[in-house]
Image (cartoon, rainbow, N blue to C red):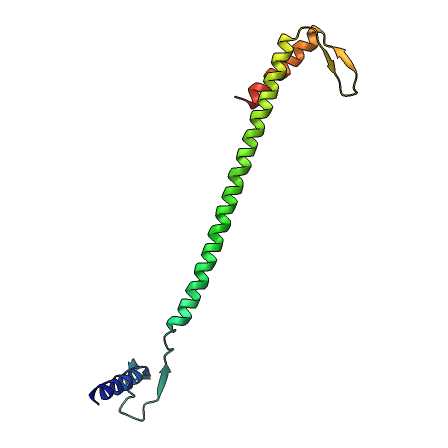
Length: 147
């Protein structure tokens, strides 16, 4: 019996604490109180306080916020992974291009008077000036892209 009486008193006291009254006294100073003013001639206004948001609502909101944060983190991680993979592919392509340039330069240096196929499918031999031009082009490409 005592326990129920204590619980009822606590519930009643918390319900009373939620009401707040606002009025202005004779000196035009705003007053706030949990009980209305004793002088009933003073105009008063009861202020309704919003109840606290239940933990279920905040848990649902925080769960949604967590899911959004995880999704954003996953998207950022995937973008970083894609960027890293693209950079690695570019570096691999650059290494292959450099290897091809070095191989062409070595073939030009060691092969002597070899015939080359042009864009139209015709074979022709390079003169010494053509070899020098080609060697300069290959060296320039090596300096520009492979150092």
